[in-house]
Image (cartoon, rainbow, N blue to C red; front, top):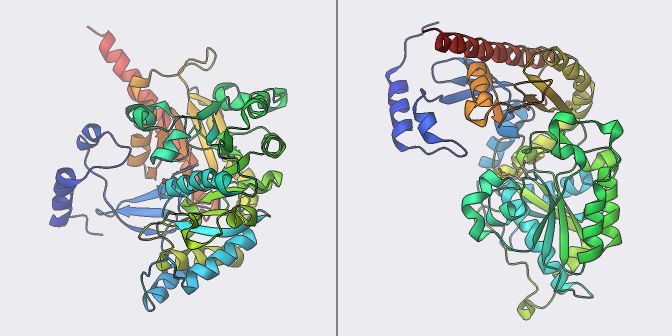
Length: 469
Ligand SMILES: *Cc1c(COP(=O)(O)O)cnc(C)c1O
């Protein structure tokens, strides 16, 4: 193999530094490292422009399911290109959009009957919120005072203003506080959502549910909906909810006539071992947002699913104002829909869910090898969503100082060893593609283990150096 850099790599790196601004990235820190430029992928691997291979431990930020360059999805997009790349969805349909809506309704929790397409998870949530709000103005016995939303502590529902308003990640929201809509309530999340270092399901009495139920009891006349990430709060650091929690949230919502919005953007499409996380407790939300895995990680497409009852409330004469006035230029993009249909077909042909279910306990066994590491404070797993929380002192439960950027350092060390992984604060988030083989899963965990010890070793030698005169 030739290892000589083609001149274009240098040029690309130079231009990347000169022209790009990356999302969720402190660009000053980024500018100090050679930019990693990915130009190919195959299965669970991605390759940079210099030919180095990396295991895709983030599934390209939680979207990829069946691996990169899956022939079925590649082919479906190519075929759709021979038909049409895009045609507006404003009042017009197209075959892949129709077929995909039908397929999604067949898979979705019972009661969901209509599909409203959009482009990304944040918009799918934004649409859910707008739908819920307008529904209460137009439903058979209108309750226009129902304008507020309840979300859980530590929740994340996207970056648009509506999504931010129902999120609870202070760091992301702070500069935009002035824009956030009023009348949203953060309800304390289940006990264990808030104490990631002391997860103890057996001792959980779910006293934590009482604040939600109490709030709905007291304020249901003003509350339009409750939004949750079913089973796992992802951005919070992969925090699973206690068994039975979802069921009780649904009961509270039904009892107090409040809509239940399930944000399955991260958990949908097999991530937790079921097609949708709602299935773990057989709940049926009134509205469900999906995005990330919808196209198997190929193209930006999202959808908001809802019930006939909600849909019907929007029916009326054209000038009656009951129309749902929301849409995007690329709503329901046909290439995206074709990719999504292929994605769903692979779940059948490759029996993806049963593979994930079979490999999940094996992944748990690999992860056990990390539990002995003195820096590993907690390992949380729900299917192929894994959070490995690093901690400075396990006995005293002292976290690392934020300024240490420990998660970032470990991610950088893992990168040099051939694994892409992104931390959320001090939690290493491992989200392998659902197609990752047992060997690849094992390799990902092995590399992470080495990366942690490398960072520890470099910290120790730093400390020794600074002690010496
Ligand atoms: C990623 C995510 C979103 C936002 O989706 P984007 O496609 O990034 O806009 C919303 N909700 C949850 C739970 C997510 O994980």
